[in-house]
Length: 309
Ligand code: HSE
Image (tube, rainbow, N blue to C red; front, side):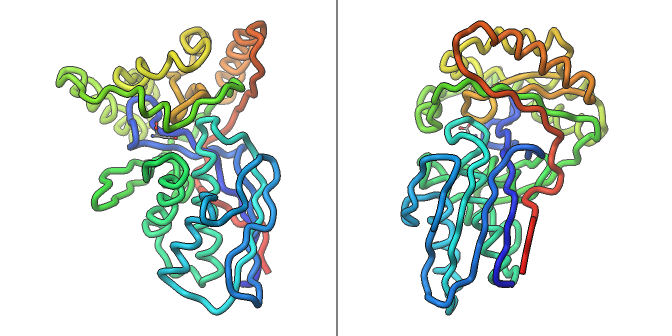
């Protein structure tokens, strides 16, 4: 293979109760990236469209990932990369993760698919570290594996793919305010009372069990975050209002997508998702803050190859 074009999905990390441990991939939003083998050795990001990001491969999340891969597996050809950002960086929808995971996946194809999904996740985590200071795996694992993923352990890294009930849909609103992941991590509590920890890990277990058993009521009951959301929601204008409207319209649950500012809601079925979409949109309409709305199925496949030759 000398060339490939891929779609790397946006992702919702944490999914309320699973801070740094849970993620899910979206179907309708993501980056498009191309990878071309060249005769001259070296890696170049030749073009980035859709966002103002550095082309410098030592700094760009995708560049950092590819350099690490080629250090581990040197090759006698070069690689040119283009990135079209399908959504805004700093949205809380795993923008750096989409590029980092996409880079790991795309280059692996040019290398003859020598690395496993777990190894690709480890490489992609380096892109997250370069961008936000922490090698988080929740967004990148969801992009690489698709569907719902659980980072069961960071050391050693262990990723578990969780089944997705077929009617599960995501509605999200991205208010156009910037929340940097680094800043959103600084507001987090350093310690958690045992009572709260018990509530939180019971909800994670409930959510995973609900996903396995297609139990939408159990999913709804478990989509609660009493540790991270209270600390971060002040960074997101009208968070409580959006959540309230989403729940009133019948969403299973709503919360902060990753480190925000995007707010997501999980819904059962397209009809309910449309209703939740409309009520969130209406609630934000007169707030004098620009916003984008998203409605998506869960992308169970992860990164997709669009073209090769
Ligand atoms: N789990 C990470 C966080 C995701 O919430 O900080 C960052 O996108």
